Length: 460
Image 1 (cartoon, rainbow, N blue to C red):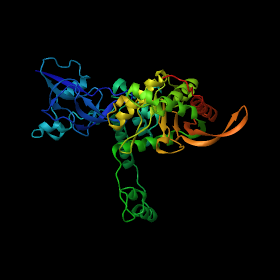
Image 2 (tube, one colour):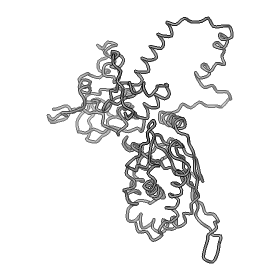
Image 3 (cartoon, rainbow, N blue to C red):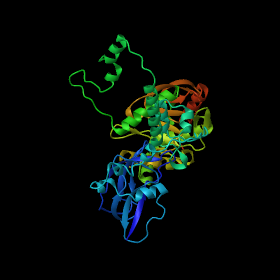
Image 4 (cartoon, rainbow, N blue to C red):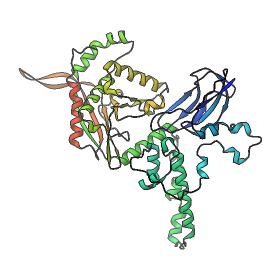
């Protein structure tokens, strides 16, 4: 018999940690290869970790609610052969793997033992360093770390001075929270050592007033009979933080165009049945829109960018995020990697696959990573146009409205005529720090041009 040590796998370039949300398998359960053994949550997506081998789960190294780093050993699986995993992560992960889970030692464990194996606890006892480590401005920080730094008022210099314990020295969530805690403690000590002036009567009344903002923020109050307080779920809180962060970060500006997509609609109606018979799935408008966006991004590479301080990062790859609504009402954005290199059939299959797995909550963390531009189809809900919020750290997001039949003026050789045409609005929000109105408007018009000038004889 042998022991296989299951490690938390790498889940994309900006994901260095995950929260253990639920153990699908219990200790003693038999698992097949590729069976999910644990559900995890990152700041991007919820997913599960499949078993790399067939055997019996004998040990879990993390409890539900704890945070594990990429490369940490999270479980042991007993396998029939004598071949155990030789490289199950870092030396730290190996050390954690030798510690039995807390729940199996409740009879003998001391309070100090109870926290052994919880990632990040070593930061609480870390001795302060004499030398401050300053990193270059090109150091990578995850969106979650940047958001925490902004909310806590950390300067770039302070952020650069934090020693990272993540992969390649990256700063993890625990690193920045530990730094903030130490900074808060120092400020408290400094404040307690300073002389405190006697508050006047008016100040005391303000502090003790029940209408103060601190007391009002303690808990929401129902002011009308029948009102109901609904707590946000984890994903909705992440979405809310992400949206607020985006509005605070980027000065949003929007452009709009109306496109005549009659040729496109007629072409799709002509080929959709034969396509479904051949491919076994539908072709929707979404891959067609994404193809047009990909072409326009090749024409205008300065839209396929992001901002890092005073630097503009031109993205080599065109990775288009596709906003998808979940049955829960939440929103997720899976990413089509290298969309400009896919055929229309390839785009259609990728779009259908990501949409199906989104609805079934089967997306992998890497499926939501690396987006450089986002597309959202608000027309699916009958809306004619909208002003979406930029998906940070990208610089633009494009929305398409519903396609409606409308009377339109056409120029012909015999003169202008009024005809019934399929019309739709396209809108784009973009970061005015780096995309001016001329570039944003011209790019959006180019997308519309690709849709309007659709070849009705195109083979697929």
